[in-house]
Each structure stands twice: as structure tokens, then as C-alpha cells.
Amino acid sequence: MRHLVAYFGNEPENLACALFSARGALYARSTAAEPARPEGFGLGFVQGGDVLLQKRPRAETLEVDLYNLVKDTRAEALIGRVGFKHDGSTPAEDTDPFRFRSWLFGSVGDLGDVPFEDLRERMLESTPAFLRRNIRGLSPSEHLFHLFLAFLHDGGILDQPSPAPAAVHAALRNSVQFVDKLIEAAGKGPLQVALCATNGRCFAAAGINSPIRYLAVEGISDCPVCHAKNDASRNGRRIPHESLRALVVEADRDVASRAGWREVPDRAAVIAGPDVIPQILPL
Image (cartoon, rainbow, N blue to C red; front, side, top):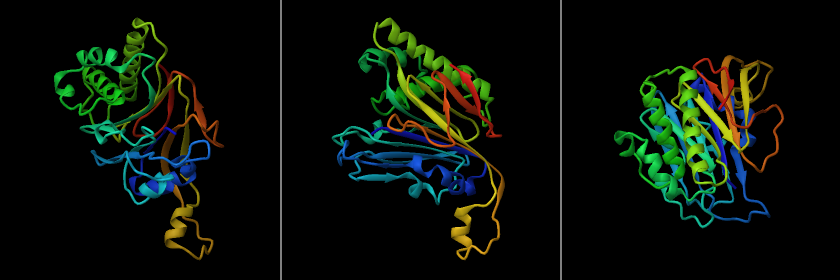
């Protein structure tokens, strides 16, 4: 089981309300086909420009309910990852998601059939020294994140609070194309990865030979979460969130589809800025 989920919204105080209809995508449980084992999880939140991490890569549990873990959180964005090495040996420094300054990043998948050590030095050579110093482990995902940060830096938007979505898309596209060329030069199989990145004001997610889907929340006419908290008698009074806008993205090969969710084409990205209006752009 390897499962990635991300959230991006415009009302941090209503994160639980926006995620309520997507809670099925935030729940993972071991099955008969995948017996109980240490799955582990990692969570990252963007809160007012700060990035906070909670990592439990060796948690021995039959289930992980990310919704229950985040429902009391106020955050503009989050990224969660469930499932690491089956023997529970993944160290925290190799556990998604990863952070740098205001940016948060997570992925699932593989960088092709090439042994990562054959790609690592080339990726590091293209990453500025001040970014290389932030790399703590040996995870391909962390190195891909820092390659993405390098392209943000090249575009002059690494520290911009609200970078243009088109510029973030360009950095993501350049990162994917760079790794594609390394894999092609090695004569190996294709890149197979789903990834998400956000700084709380801009959001990007993509699937390359790895399916992703998204749910767009465009206002809530009557919120069941607020009713449960404030109006247990459900006396008919509506509790709306008319201006709430949010995106929830999921990458999970074990789930064919979800009602109301939209599939993102292969080698395309879903990009959004502060207005939380999704754009689908090719990579």
C-alpha cells in the first residue's frame, strides 16, 4: 500500500469541512491481500507560511485515518503519505513529505528502473549548494523535491509568497523532463511517479505513468461537520460555507475511481493559485 493525498484550500479554519466529502481518500487499511504490517505515515501542513511535519514511518497499525489526524488542524495546505518499506525500516529522514522554507513536497512511485545511485549524483550536480545542504537522507523523492526547488530558484520564484501558477508549472515540467532525460540516457524504463508540491499559496500535482485524481470543493451549502459540532439537534438551520474553495488530490493505484472525482491525464499537472481554481496543463 502506497498512498499519497494532498489538500489546498482558501479557508484554513474550515479544513475539516472541505475534507469531509473526501474522507474516504484519507483512510487506508491493510487487507487480506496485504496483511497487517508496519505501514507508517507522514503528514505535512502549511500554516501561515510555516511548514510543520509529523512522521511515523514505523507505526505498526492496521489502519491510518488521516482525516481523524488532521480534522482539528487549521492549514492552507497539507500533504500526507501512507505506506513505506514493508519491514518498517524507513528512517524519518527518508519519509515523505519533505519541506524547505515555505515549500512542502510529497511523492509516491519510482524514478524508473535505474538504480537511484546512478541518478543521484547527476541530480545533485544540478542542485545549488544551498539546497543540497538541506538534503537529509537518501530518498529519491527528497532529491526530486530539491531539483524542483532548483528550478523554482532559477525562475526567481523560490521565495515569492504567491508565485505565478504558470511559473510553478514550468519548474515542475523542467524537473520531470530533466529526470526523464537521465533515465533515457541510462536506457532504462520510464519514470513512474505521482507528486504534489505547495507553499500554501500555490499548488501543483502531477502523475507521470502513475494515476492521480482530484476533487474540487466549490462552496458547501450545508456543512455536516459544523452541524455535528454546533447543532447536534439538527433543527434545520443551514450552516453554509459559500466562499470555501478547495482541492483534494489522491494518488492510489489500488482505487480505480471515486464518484465526483476527476482523473488527471497522464503526464499532466493540476495547478492552482490563491483562487483555488484548478488548471490542467501538460508536462
